[in-house]
Amino acid sequence: MALDGRTPRLDLGGPVCTLWFDRADQRNALNIATWRAIPGLIGKATTRPQTRVILIRGAGGHFAAGADIAEFDRVFADRRATLAYLDDMTTATNAIAAAALPVIAVIEGLCIGAGVAVAAACDLRLAAEDAQFAITPAKLGLVYSRLDTRRVVDLVGASAAKDLLFTGRMITAGAAHAIGLVDGVFAPAALSAAALEKASLIAANSAWTHRHSKAIVASIMAGSRDDDDETRGWFADAPEGADYREGIAAFHLRRTLNFAPL
Image 1 (cartoon, rainbow, N blue to C red):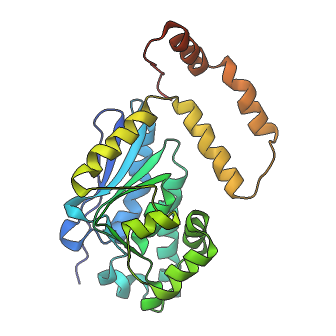
Image 2: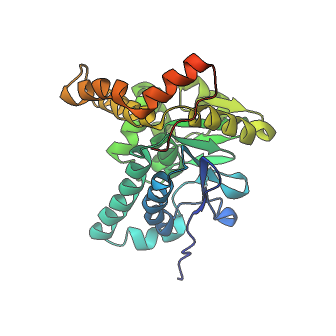
C-alpha cells in the first residue's frame, strides 16, 4: 500500500507563524510523515528572528482526527517498528513543548487521540464551540504513552484523565474547557480572530521573558519548588538585558513596546 507522505506546511507571515496540518481529506490524521516533519518546522519557526508566537492548526475544519490508522500495519509491524513509531511521536511533541516561543493550538472539529497529545504539548489551547475531543486508545487496545498521559494529567488532573482514557468518550469544547483541557472556547466564526488576538498580545511582550517563563513552568511541573542557581541567574540577568531597558523606556515615555527579536 502506498503511504501518503504529505507533511504539514508553515505559514511564516509576520510575528505569528502558523503550522498547518494539511491532510484535510483525512481529517488531518497524523501520519509518520507529519510526526517526522514537526520538529524541523518548529525549529524553522523559532529560529526565524521575526517569529514571536506559533499557532498549530488543522486545514479543512478539523484539528487532527488521531493517528493515521491506515499506517498501523506498518508502524506496528513488529516491536522494533512500534518503538520507533513511539520515538517519532515523542520527538515531535517534545519539540512543540520545548519550543523557545509560546505555541497555541487552535482547535476546530475533531481533536482525537494523538491530536489531543499534540494539543496538550502546546502552551495554550483555544477551541471552537463545536470542536470535539476524545482520547481513544482503549477503543483499539492500545495505550497512551506516559509522556502524553502526564501532559493530560497536568492539565485536567488524574481523575478526569482516567475518565477520558477509560471511556474513550467524546466531549464537547465546553466540557473540555470545564476540566481545563482547553483555555478558551469561541464561536466557530470568531476562533481565528480570537487566536490572532491572543497571539498578538503575547507577541507584543518580551520573547526573552517568554522563553524563561516556559522553562520555569516546565521545571515546576516536573517537581521543582525553589529557585536554583540557574533560575536565580535568570532573575539577575534580566535587569542587565536589552528587553528590560526597552520595557522601562517604553513605560516612562508612554510609548509602544518594541522588543528586539530573541
